[in-house]
Image (cartoon, rainbow, N blue to C red; front, side, top):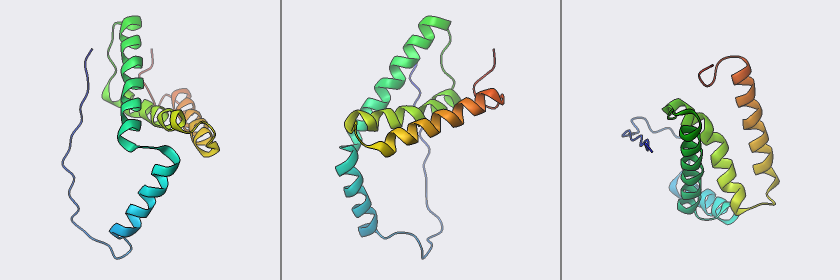
Amino acid sequence: MTRYVIRKKCTMTNKHPETANTADIRAVLAERGKVYGNFARSCQVDIAIIDAMSTHHFNTTGRVFEVDDIIIMSKITHKLARIAGTLNHVDSWRDLAAYATLIADGIEAGELFEQG
């Protein structure tokens, strides 16, 4: 199965006064860690879900996912990975429903996923 790895060097050229400082960022990360668990493990779950979906898609259709498809689906898989760590966190379930609605609307409008 083909694995997609997207790497692009990102550099910040402009620093804005309203940009959060390192202590603020660390505080947010600590709070998120308490709610969602270890970020690296969550990413591993996310990747495992995409990998399982990719394998099933290939076995069913004979086609591999396009990068666009993976990015769209990652909105859902990211939420599923978070939910796996915190089943009772209502906001994650609402976020999942919202992303699913946006994706369904995009499919109906012919804006997401290749038609046919």
